Length: 400
Image (spheres, rainbow, N blue to C red):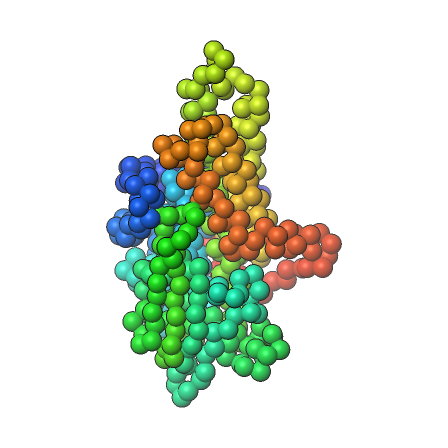
């Protein structure tokens, strides 16, 4: 039996994250966004709340909470600003949960434990200047030399690129398969910032998520110990796709929080602003936009909760998670656009938060699978061209 009623523990988490974000981040986020400045001080605070290892078992330094709790935290963080949720997506979702499932015991002790505790910050490196949705297009290579791999390549559009300590990086280890564009030639590695030949940079010309750190990193013959190979040689593509299931889940829940933020801001403004002698909330077309936000919020929340329930039970959820990500992000773009419209000229100014919401929402419609990619995926499921079968790519079921 499926129940989406939150447990007492989940409600406490929801309240704690909501109060922390409202108290510690909301008062400064306008200035951080305007100054294009990332505040590293959020890391120890998020660690203290248990967020950086929220769904990592306690035996590996995490909070040991379930995957729905990860979604709750993502929704509450993005309600205040997308930059907060991005931290959870790349650190806790893409990286930590991948190491939990695919990492060796040694890798879990050396990397997952300090990451879950918040002592180290981690991210994910798949996208390159010439390869986004087309993973086969990556050019980074890893050449085996003795007990090490030598990595050379560049990654682009990487969240936390200039502040993270550890990177889950994907590279070709079989150059013949690279020529054939056979993903069985891709492998995954843990790369540390301190490795010689590693450099990173911050992207300055972003349109949105200005309070977040996004950038690139280069590897110029970076030597990586063989012990830092995650999984087996050639399993990198499977690991990358598994990671995206976790990242997309947090993006879906986060976008749901952004819809709620747009709704709440619009309701507040619509009851304050008057035109033609009445509150604009009384105008039918304004009501229509707010009603659409509410419908989208409730639908998006149910979709990510369904995906979270599947994760909790160790069941394959690529289809459900993809649908949640696609729907929630597209709905958040609609909600942000309507929120600006409801605010009129004020929505076009920096005085109200809806302009920031509008700039922030667009990224999620593109990254971790564009809306077009997700449309094709969902159509292929319905048409029977795509079927998810149980594989090793499942999260371990939640153990209370």
